Length: 61
Ligand SMILES: [Zn+2]
Image 1 (tube, rainbow, N blue to C red):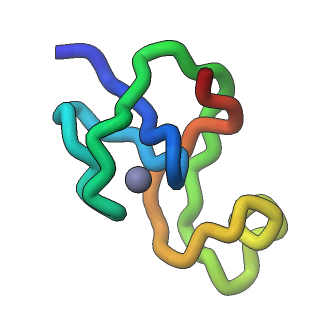
Image 2: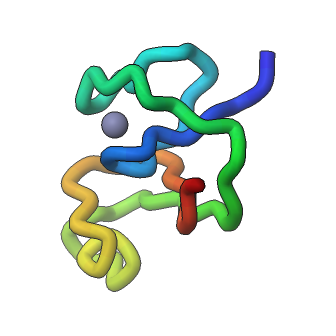
Image 3: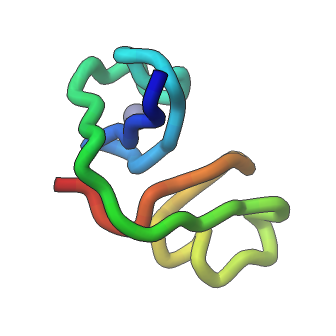
């Protein structure tokens, strides 16, 4: 199963439903990958408004 990225929060997962926000608008057309380990200190997490650690797509189409 291919990984997909949520169009709402950019979270990457393998299902068709986002485990983070519950959106069903998952896209397999995404570029870039940001792995957030410490969302408190991460500049990327801050810029993307990510509030929990995980893997996120930089751009989702
Ligand atoms: Zn989501």
